[in-house]
Amino acid sequence: MTTLEAIRAALPAYPIEVSFPDINRWREGNTGIDFLHSFDSGKPGKHVMILALTHGNEVSGAIAVDALLAAGVRPTTGRLSLGFGNIGAYEQFSAENADATRFLDEDMNRVWTPSTLDGERQSRELARARAMRPFIDTVDLLLDIHSMHEASAPLMMTGPLEKAIALAAELGTPEHVIIDKGHANGTRMRDYGGFGDPASPKNALLIETGQHFAKSARDVALDSAARFLLHAGVVAEADVATFLTQTLPARQKFVEITQPVVARSMDFRFSQPFTGLEVIEKAGTEIARDGDEVIVTPYDNCVIVQPSMRHLGVNVTMMRLGRLLDR
Image 1: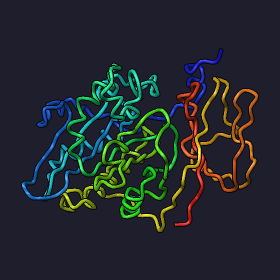
Image 2 (image 1 turned 90 degrees about the vertical axis):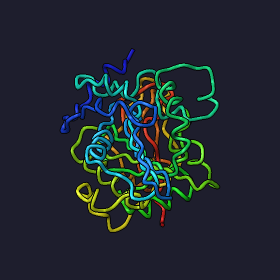
Image 3 (image 1 turned 120 degrees about the horizontal axis):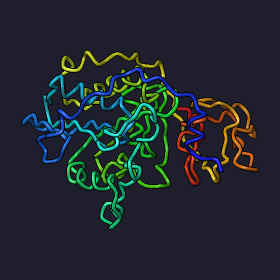
Image 4 (image 1 turned 30 degrees about the vertical axis):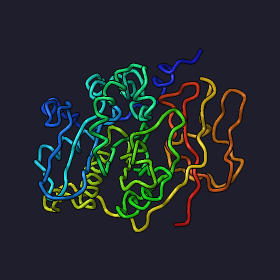
């Protein structure tokens, strides 16, 4: 039987181009919750948060939050919060098995359903989410910083709500904006509570900065965090100017996810070495096989989004298929 360990061993290993910050210096925050820091300007305004490490091996966000804390960035209006999520998984990261510490017991970005948070199931990720929940409930604007298994260009993941799509457009970067409908296996933090309510003024975005360990992902994380804070009007430009390194694209591309491709067996394989954002010109083109099943593109100009074999499992989403929108 094919094992995930054997599949990972056969995949190319990406070089680790960045240093993992020692975030233990930020353990004792000022919120009563470890690794969550919050600063109030004393002036009216929104509560804006930058969150890193929802997944333990996604280091670019940790670098960005560490840098913002180290720089002593403080709000000029409203409230600014900076935090780290799945600390336990981050602390267990090993370069020899870089894909293994996305989480410890379960994906922390699939537990943000009230019934799950209020339920009886126990895991280390749920314990952390439950501890953070009362604080997250106070946040008006959230940027959740992630990165990807493969070397893809950065993506802004908005969810289906027009308020989040509009926010991504106002930020103007990265070039590719992915309009998805959440995840079948559970609710992301981006879609939790008021963030996922079209009638709520609260809003959230999830950015995928690039491949986990690339310098470019680090730079995108710093840039996107700075732009998010500036757009929210919560910091002075001079305080974050050093982090603004990315050139705005001439025009953003909006891709609407139409369907996931879910593995039904451990025999799933891609038909091409996809890394993400490939546009397959013709409908009916083979893109993967799952045992005897041949998987083909459902329409012309089909966009491949976030393909990866690194977490293959039965009922695991292996990639998403999207359609370019004219907007």
